[in-house]
Structures are given as structure tokens and as C-alpha cells.
Image (cartoon, rainbow, N blue to C red; front, side, top):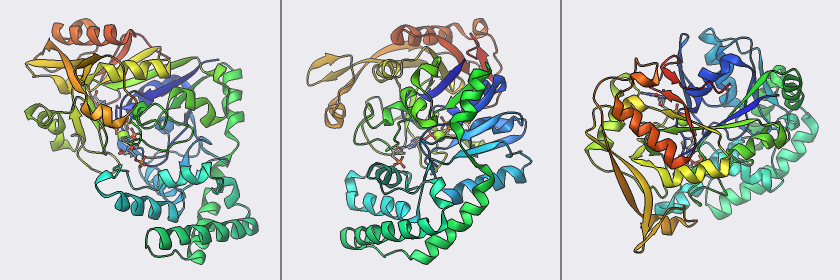
Length: 434
Ligand code: GDP
Ligand code: IMO
Ligand code: MG
């Protein structure tokens, strides 16, 4: 029965957490299927304002099972702290389940992330520094440690000693860093393992039981499709395996692709990006300043949820978005932060790139080519007046309606939900997707 995957269509921070919090009401299970605490999902509802890094956004409904899937990279210290903070604020986490197959972020992953960014210098990726890239690298290189391994005390000791031996050589000989202490790492991770034990289980069965029962399952994407290893702006991407795309979601919770019934893409009404890498529609003017600082007085400007870095800002890039719609097989779109565009006299949408004198309407593979691309813009009329209290499409200013219609046309996909504010109910539901 219905499994709906919600992905980010751009470079992350599109408002996935906020949308999953909205849609989760009708779901039985909400599962994260990729990435780690490089993600930061903001949710504002009647329980307060929360920034989640690992726990799925369904956690605010006490009757939902929330899953951290096998495709995730779990930093146990971060997860335990997040659980603690939620419980302290009265959020029940007893229905949280962590896959025994998820990979574990180890102290050397954080250190290698930091050292490799330093080594890259001007070519740094601009990672979140949470050790996620090195964790997935080790997963693929078959020297990862999984949640299930933490419970096997003796086996873990041997494995961890071997792996740390290797990693300490890399840290010292390749990067000139300081080696890490085995006993300290081992003791800490055994302790984390004991505290995580009540949450650990086989997640595949939970999801399949729900679908067989006809219940909705919501798969919560992290990051954005344009940060995907294969389809993103390589090498300025993230290292999640499986990827955060719709296709990655089945792998990341251990179900078949035929179980997925809908793929929904969340897009900001403009574009943002944190970290380095190509960004064809990037702005360095009054408009970007204005969009970045909208709501800043309430701590709600365009600053990274995980790192606090200012987000780079640009006009809506329909070339990149159309590409993302295609490789995710999206059946519906959500547009977020429409309210933020209010008060601009003119809006622009990028409909093609000019590269070395040629007009192209597809996404080139090379970062270097993308860096030479110049946006071809279409101009649309702006609108005045608050939209955050609007709940019906027809009540939006005509120019806002035209903007949304144009996005639908350019992406050949319907916009089913429009978010006009960060709070749960601040949305226009054109077509309920779940
Ligand atoms: P995620 O990583 O995709 O979940 O997104 P983030 O939480 O990192 O960033 C999205 C930001 O936009 C958060 O601060 C949200 O509270 C905020 N947000 C989401 N939707 C809206 C919206 O429609 N309007 C406004 N003003 N803010 C929104
Ligand atoms: P959510 O789920 C925005 C970016 C980093 C960097 C690149 C690689 O909140 O949308 P990494 O630490 O993953 O090795 O960094 O990927 N990045 C994100 N940007 N939102 C995210 O997650 C991101 N997760 C990773 O900024 O450019
Ligand atoms: Mg985020």
C-alpha cells in the first residue's frame, strides 16, 4: 500500500522537515532513509520549534513509529543527545527505532572530515564537518562499523582495533594529524551501545507490516537531489550511499522499489545552497540580502540549520529543478517559503543556461562547465502583501498564482502544496498528497 517519499529537489534545506511534519498526520510510519546529522530539519508546531538532525520529523505524533533506516549514518552521541533534548521538552521518543544495519559515525570520521577539508584548501567541499563523508567512504570500503556490531563486545574490540590502526596511519602519515586513542573510543561506544539498545530493531519488517496493513508510510529525505553523488554537482556533493534521491529511499529502509507509490519533491520558491560548488543563479545583491535576512530577528533567516553558515541565495533555477524532477520521477511538487518572496517588484526564473555562447536547457555534468554557465532569465511580476495567512490558492495575489503556474509549466509537474510560513498550518493544500 502507499509509501510516499518526500525528497529535497535542490541543494538541501528546502523545508523537508516542515513538510513531513505536516504530512505525517495521516501516516503510520515515518522513516529517514539516508544521510546523517549533516541534515538539519526545522519543525515548528504546537510543541515548539525544533531542529532535528537524525530523528524523523514524525516524532511529534505519539502514535507514529519513527525509523532511522539502514541507509543512515548514525552518530550515537548526537542521536542520544537529540533524544534527550526531545524528552526534556516533553516529546515522547518511545516509538523511535534505529536500524541494526545503519552505519556508525566514529571519532575518526569527524577527524578525517576536518583534515581532508583542510588539505583541500581553496577546493574544500564546504562539508558540515560531521564525519558523514568518511563514514560512507568506510561503508563502501567494507571497514565500517554498524549499529549491530556495537552490541558484540569482543568482536567489536578486534574490529575496532584493526580499523583504528589503519585510520591512525592515515591520520598521521597522510594528514600529519594526531592519532586517536583506542581505549577511549571503545569505552565510549560500548556505553553508547548500551544506551541505544532499547531503540535498535529490524526496520524492514515494521515498514512491510504497515504497508500490508494498508497504512501510509512516509519516507523522509535528507539533503537535496543536486547534492547526490551521481546526479548532483559532483564533486561538490554529499557522500550518502544510498543517495537521498527517491530511488535511494527503497534501499535505505530495505524495501523494493515497487513498494513506493509516490515521489514528492520539496522545492524552495527560490534557491539556496550551503557549502561550495556551482550555483548558476546565485545572487550577490540587495535581493539576496533581503531573502537571507527575512525573519532573521526570530532566528529564521537563511542560515544553515546544522552549521549556522549563511546560505548562498539565487533565483529559482528551472533547468536544475526540471532535471531533479526527472531523475527522481516526481509526481508532485511542494513549493516552500513563498511568503519570503513578497514585496519584490520583479521575480526571475532561470529557464536555460548560456554556456560558451550556446543556449542549453539541460544540466551539464561537469562542475567546471556549470561554473561557466550564465543564467537565461524570464522575468515575472512580483506581488505585495502578506501571504502567510492565505489558505486557498485563489486567495493568493494574482502575480503569486502566475509564478506558481509558471513553475508547474516549466517542470511539467503539479504543485500540490504551497508553504507560506514555517509553522505546521501555514500551508495551502491544493491537492492532499497523502
Ligand atoms: P530542511 O533541511 O529541508 O528540513 O529545511 P531546513 O529546516 O534546514 O530549512 C528550511 C527553513 O525554512 C527552516 O528555517 C524552516 O522553518 C523554514 N521554512 C520552511 N517552510 C517555510 C515557509 O513556507 N515560509 C517560511 N518563511 N519559512 C519556512
Ligand atoms: P538537509 O537535510 C544543506 C551539503 C554541505 C556540503 C555538502 C557536503 O538539512 O537539507 P557533508 O557534510 O554532507 O559531507 O557536506 O553537502 N549538505 C547539506 N546542505 N542541507 C543539508 O541537509 C545538507 N547535507 C549536506 O553543506 O555542501
Ligand atoms: Mg536543513
